[in-house]
Amino acid sequence: MWQDFLAALALVFVIEGVLPFLNPAGYREAVSRIAQLDDRQLRYLGLGAMLAGLLLLYLVR
Image (cartoon, rainbow, N blue to C red; front, side, top):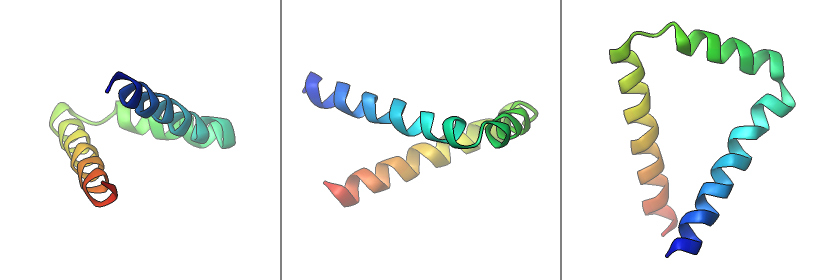
């Protein structure tokens, strides 16, 4: 189980690193815009990301 968790975490790091590697200016702009969101909007964004991840995991598994 821990191996699967660590493998998934490693993939998250790889995927998270793609955008700043390929387009650092665009990444900086996106992070700047995200930083300007209020707490409620940021929570909804996080909830949407978690639900999308759960749906993808369900479809794959």
